[in-house]
Image 1: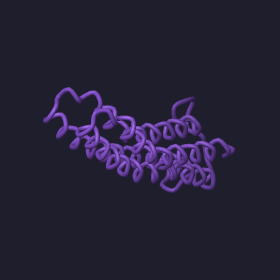
Image 2: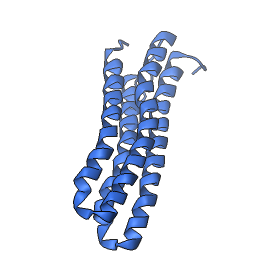
Image 3: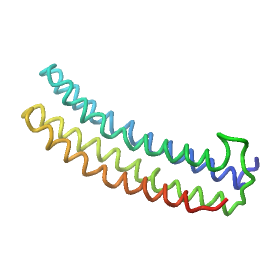
Image 4: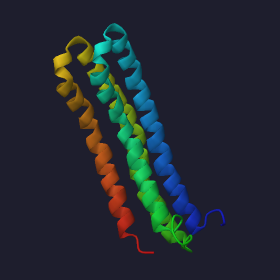
Length: 159
């Protein structure tokens, strides 16, 4: 497979989707995890509540992985063999992976910060978990929209 060939560009796009969204999720979960550890050190009984909030930024990594799998299936990497894609087709697939990768990177970090704030809210007022989750979930909206854009773009590319 040549560099800058259609298959390379498509698989590079799959890598970008999983890589960027995964990095964002790792950072976001780390941000929320630090806040969660602080709350749990004061009250170990709040572990379950803060764990829910800490896990929220992990969804972007799942979205990136989903798009990567869809690309790998579409180009035949996980099937009968890699298709002989044109550079244009590979470029279209690469472009289709960018929304979930880039938005996943940024939104997961932002969601980690929102989740950390929600975790601190739960630390002071345990009955306010739903409000903390709502704040963090608002960021999720944009990750879901990026997933939808990437998915629709991928499904509209004829191979």
